[in-house]
Amino acid sequence: MIARYFIKSLLLNKSLLGWGIGFMAFWIFMGAFVFGFNTDSRSGALAYTSIWFSLIGLISGSVVATSIAHSVYYANSSLSYAFRYTKLKPISYISEMMISASLVTALIGGVVILLSAGMFSAKAGYFLLPTYPEISLVVLLTAGIFIFLLSCVLVLFANNSLGLKSISFIALLPQLLSYLFGFSELGVPLPSYIIYASPFSEIPRLLFQTYYGEASPLGISSMSGPTLNPYLLSAGLLFWIVVLFMLAIYLIRRVRSGSIEEARQI
Image 1 (cartoon, one colour):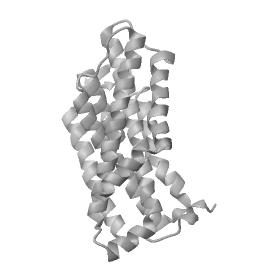
Image 2: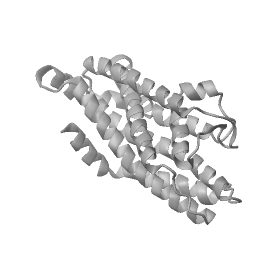
Image 3: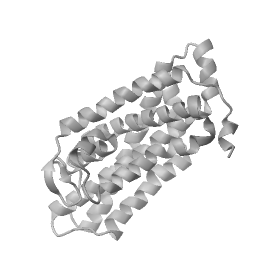
């Protein structure tokens, strides 16, 4: 019930579609036609496309999940009442919101796949299709769950402990981290232990592999260095999802009823 409502509302949200699809299309266009694009060989072009797809996939997921997490902030008073006096349970609420985030992220991710394949193929003169598009969607589903849970935990922590004055920054923090870790992949490679420990590095590395067809090297921009173990990357991402899910349940059971007008105070 809740998941169906949120999925419908998100798909009709012009702002979300503008940022999640329109703005991502802009970045894909920049990567294909403006920034340096190595078209000397099909393999090089596919690697370059895979890097950009992994970056845009991460950012688009953060846009969707952050938008859903804002709903928790707006509904703090309603949730506090509903958990006490209705049949709605915290675990059901979080689970259905996770479903909403993951499905919408996958839908927008499907559009990102098509845009990436179309624009980069047009620029390179080769058909640069993803090797495993179905696995790309699975990774995007999982990414949507993780980023939603992170956003939800941050919003609930701010609501319960810090007050709502900082909610605007708190809610956007996952998106800022997506840009930070995502674009860092285009420069000097991070140490392998950071990549294995950071979900914001694990997600683009997994997305890269699903598009390129081979495991991501440590130096992804230069396609050099040892390859990363996809099973360890997946295990690390799933570990963070479990931890954040438990934190989200713990925090939402103690959700504090507050006025959303507090967030407008400076």
